[in-house]
Length: 137
Image (tube, rainbow, N blue to C red; front, side, top):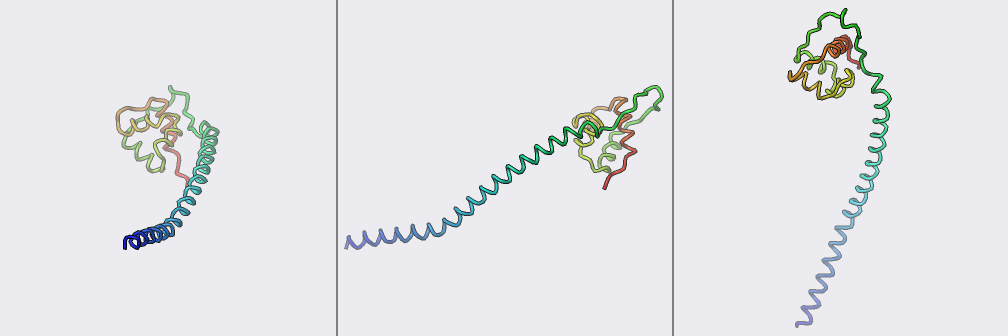
């Protein structure tokens, strides 16, 4: 009888392994395919980021708003942090994009909007010229 139980246990183990293999094989294939797609997407993202960086370097300097150089003739410009934040949101610009447009850091834009600091006179002139811009659709 013990010989029979040993053979029965081996047969049950063999059949169980076969069933598990049949269930796991499709999952392994789909996992492998997913890893291949992820690798291709990572390469594509890297190429696109390089392109964006290259284009950003070419156009970043030319897209800034030129500030007037005559400080003596310019009228006194007022600045309100809430108005500046509203202007940025109305133009649908991020803080980083607004900073690039004005030629300052994104941190400066954040500080202006929260009232932690105020822009300098030349930056006020640039902000005034941005106020005259409309949003592109």
